[in-house]
Length: 316
Image 1 (cartoon, rainbow, N blue to C red):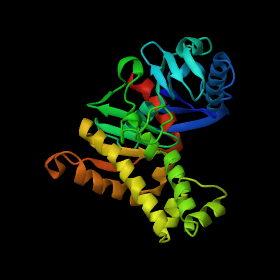
Image 2: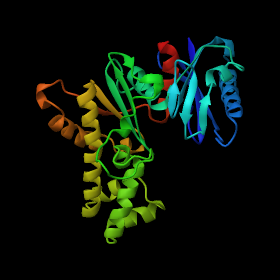
Image 3: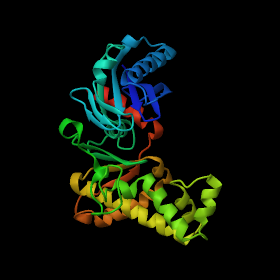
Image 4: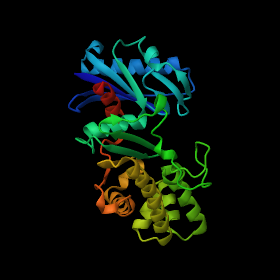
């Protein structure tokens, strides 16, 4: 059977056709252009689905289901986007609207939840019923699967691990509260931390790295630290502690088999995963007395949203 997964972002809408074995046949993308009315964006989503089906030689009526991963608060039962600041959607009946163009079952969920499902079904967590997915990007997104159940909270407004408190009265978070995990562990946070260290240490290799890249990025401090820069090493060490602290809280709450880390920062690979693993081993509740939790890099990369959205439809 064929399923379509749609990954909705602030800049781009991606869609792909996936089968139950996890084979991705074709994918494509169109600009989101979020300043438009939602009806125009939904029409583009439907046209994108029809386009990839036609290119693959599949009649749209052969699609068993469509899944959508969307940033924000998603009421999956009602088929409504309650609020998504990335695409300026509020109380959008997206399932009903999409049904004007394509007649098949449609399922929606938060994008991090969908990605967690995709990684659990087809990626680093394959075969596990207990997975926490953490994406370190512009913010910190989390998806939680426990005993095979995707946790959403009331009306889809839960499972926002990025907004657990790391430090009362700390850095201002994009949500308006201070001290959230996201304010310390996102890619946005390490860029801010790197810039601050660069100002304090003009001699640091971070300045040369940023000049070479043409900007300060999430890689800047990591690249300089690997070359032995002391100031960069301090930035990276502190950042890893921030990431690990939030993960330890998630471990203490859910005790999954795996914590899977995605987002651009995860491209630091095993080197980063091992450092986080050591802190999780040491500081999670009960330590070695409790079942070990394995920290892994998510492997589906930029296609995680497509796989995860398709998996929403498969799960139903």
